[in-house]
Length: 546
Ligand code: GLN
Image 1 (cartoon, protein in one colour):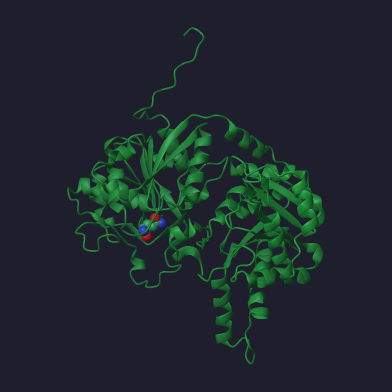
Image 2 (image 1 turned 135 degrees about the vertical axis):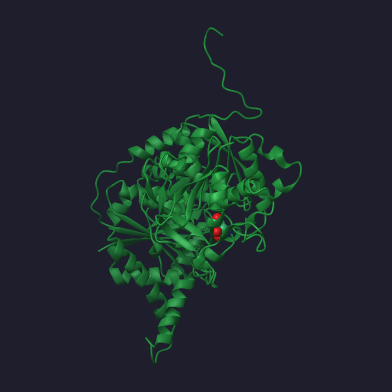
């Protein structure tokens, strides 16, 4: 039977709960304990797929096509697992399921209530994941902060679990923030005490408190939290901010958290082996030459909107022993006449996914700049559609070429709705989602990057390359280097006469891992690193004879 670790957050959101959960998973996995992870999101949306990236950040897509919280991306990258739809539960899903059961008559005669019906549905999802994953430990993160109204049924459900599966099989971790007061130059524990009180009010006594802070946490502070929150001193885990998120598992291991969890849950465990992580962090800390990549997107004000893209670039840079100097360009800013300067230092241009017409012309301009100036270009989903639009405008000699998403009346609809999408009216969960196979053309840049001819990649789109224009665009120098196995859908395209202009209709960023960069990102950064741009010069040879 699986054991459960429930992680709640206190004081403020965005305190690093997701990274803490991912890191707890990492240190347990390093002891050969099998892990699965689940994120509970208290909002009423069924999934984040219909939310603006400004509201929610990136939508992470699992292999089985679920649109999920970006924390799942961190779980996958840290623990190196491929999760499924079962790993992200929202209040929207829970309430829809309970109401559907009520309509079916499953509860005939009864009054449907938050306790026990909603809480039972929630617990059912915990148990389903435990069952399907067969993991020894299931780590479950409750989104939001203790005290949120929508979070209450989830807290009640995790409280009930202690009796359902036995106290010895459940562990509660609370992640809080210790704010720093500059006037008195001290960290304050009172908000932590309050949030633990709030948890206790719900019937949950945390076993472990992870204390986030931007400053070192003195021993006296640990004592105080231990005393006021009634938690063993060694279970008050300091987690000061570190330079890279990949250091967090090492910091937590150092505090003895791994052993503490093993002891408290009586787990069978090997000695931890974090050598790969140590190596990774050592490399990250080394001083490396930067490669300047310009990301042209429409949601750049909120960097979390491109979380996995940013991580994938860093994984790729590390492979080449380089760092990434990531420049964020708002695509609308490129629509101004004098905007080319924004691209002048780019050694590579990346256009990520997105929806809607805002900023599209700026992206087309960036793609044109990349093509004309032989700057390496990586297009992801929308980034591929933009590359096709730009190339079609050049090849067909008409600035009217477009996607029907942005101009329904274009005479050259080079990107158009997938046929199956034409009948689809609902917006939620109806895109082409999740893993699909893609056959690569031999000797193409894409095939060379992957080193294999059949690959599976995760999708999230409604529009696609319009096959009607394939012959003309191919004749003008565009190679459709990745196709669905039936040849119907263009999944990857690249330009013949360009150092490296490659785009894909899928999202390779979701498959990248630290220490195992995605092949397209790896080659993109690999080519970009050799491009010399304005203001840059090759490092001078440092020899004693100079
Ligand atoms: N808006 C485009 C589509 O729906 C691209 C989607 C994306 O970039 N994820 O096809």
